[in-house]
Length: 605
Image 1 (cartoon, rainbow, N blue to C red):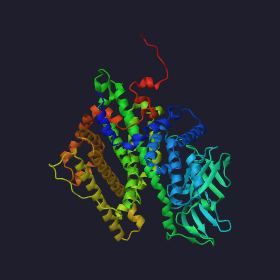
Image 2 (tube, one colour; image 1 turned 120 degrees about the horizontal axis):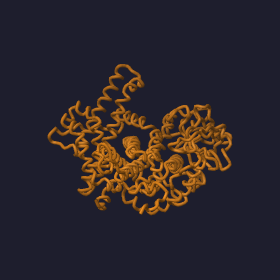
Image 3 (spheres, rainbow, N blue to C red; image 1 turned 90 degrees about the horizontal axis):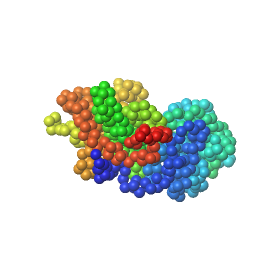
Image 4 (spheres, rainbow, N blue to C red; image 1 turned 120 degrees about the vertical axis):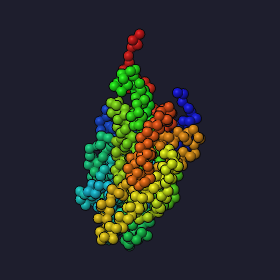
């Protein structure tokens, strides 16, 4: 079938807006094939050095007078292409340009005494890192033990790691020869009083080695995301006063401390404002590798031929003809479109003063996008047979990034539980209406029905959670016991909320498409969204929201959706806007065997 370019262009609008098209030529110039080919056979130190060489290469080719965080129309396309080219670089890139620079812009606003640090970071003369989490407290930033004690005589801060549980882990700062600056969170102590967590700019190492008092111990790198991981501790490191990212706090000449935030707990919560950069970045990067995995696997399934028992040993046929492959691969394609729509929703201008509900939506979208990425990268790899396991075809790289971000920026489960906590408290939250059309008046392909079903599930699980929490409190249980037996219910409610958010995004985005593209886009998104509804069909049946006939009809409907999608599958894959040359997966090529090997073969004729 000839490609339908108008249809493909319309579908691509679900993935990217016009501003992305304006950056394409710049992206193609930056990501030259000679420098961004997938690394192979490098020793660890050479691999780390390449990561920072690539980081410097990108910085040399962008306008650095304005921080990338304030050039979001360029930042997000760069993040996509970095994730596709090199997941390890993606991690270093966002830590440098988003969290390190973001800390200074966030907590050092309206100051000019940090301009030299920003200039160094912009040029990548030094590379930034974020040192928040500590070895003894997992992903929790609520119990930071590192101390910054104010010295009134010198107006410096003395940074100290009091014990092994306070060692910072896992910053990627172990590569020798690369000057590094860290944003370090520490308890501020003034006149023996704890004033909560603040961020400090701390030089960690120069080209010769670690700075005085900074102890950097390289750790083993994760094979799925090679980076120069290390533990870092501080032994009386003196930090100049100007490197204190004091936000609205101050220390007067007489040593007295003032802060508009009334207590250390409130101040400590302020440090977590940085995490929103991680959530945005994660959604964009994870959606990119989700799209690439699905697109590559679908293209390969059209070129990979097989014959065997179920084909009656007839002439070979492409594996995409098999319904089980379609369910897996078209399901991946469907999830990739949903992830792309989610990423598009966070990639615009940053809202001013996000509400509690908007913050919850952001981190919920991060959590659900990570789950989509883990599922799609794994399914795409498995559906591609032994070649899916080849590192050259990128599935393992992309799966590694998804696994890494399950923990980064708070784990997916913790984010869901935090969402449930805020919704149970009613913080900027109103449960959806409980309005499902009566049987006989509805079509399971109708997005309005998806919204009614997912919204009602969210509402009823929310009502049940609130009721159980209230009953447990009334029974005299402490807050830990109140929640401890309800974490599973809380996570289910948050997952229902996440699915309803995705349904809303899909409806909004597909509504704007021309008729033909809208029908196809809804069919492809339906495969994922109805699959999620089907996974809870027992609950919907028990609640009287689906009939037994509808539950029994769902598997056939999913198969019918695959049949309807099949003629358009390649167009759908290519409309995901994947730069195949950058991904470099041989199996994305129609003649993948030739693309895979460098050997040449004589013409048998």
